[in-house]
Image 1: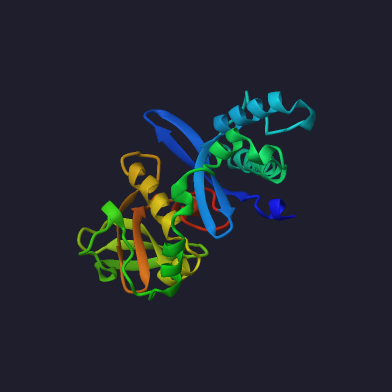
Image 2: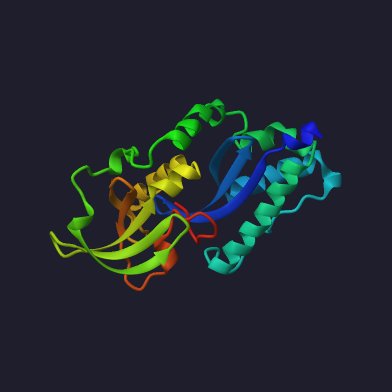
Length: 253
């Protein structure tokens, strides 16, 4: 029973569309939880397929399955991706719950189980629990220390998530419209989600130069909230502005 309790808890809560040069592809966010430690990795379908084929040869009697490759049709159709995500989730669940499969080097590498950094932040988690919610969060290169909420006229709510909401805002300086994601620091710190938010922010930063992706221009904070200033795509799906939700977003950056 002790060995059973050591199995990681794994889920695929969301996905994200990315571009590499001119190539467009989908990545799936794989959340891994082992005891008090939690991290995530982004994996493409091709990486799941490679792992599947490796394990299928080693364990032919287990009849492992993953969603089939799509030869015809739109690989970026939201319903197709949702179904594929469900199938990949079931596949990875079977791997981590099987005594032999869960200890395979290929499975452990896929989930980054042996990366020491994933097990080195327990003290930071305790600091997060004990710290004041008014402390500053390191926003990295996106942080603008001079920006403040009064720089904008907030017009309406265009999306809601478990951490906060997305607002349509007009910047007073130049009249430009932005989608601003407002997150509650207290909720992020209580759920130990700070690292996840910052990692997803980094992907948004890379999207700024892409004409068809929602990108992050800059971020700032008050004593109790984080503000992410995003592209506003008129007529776009609300999910385009909610990359940092926890639960069932259509994209998670």
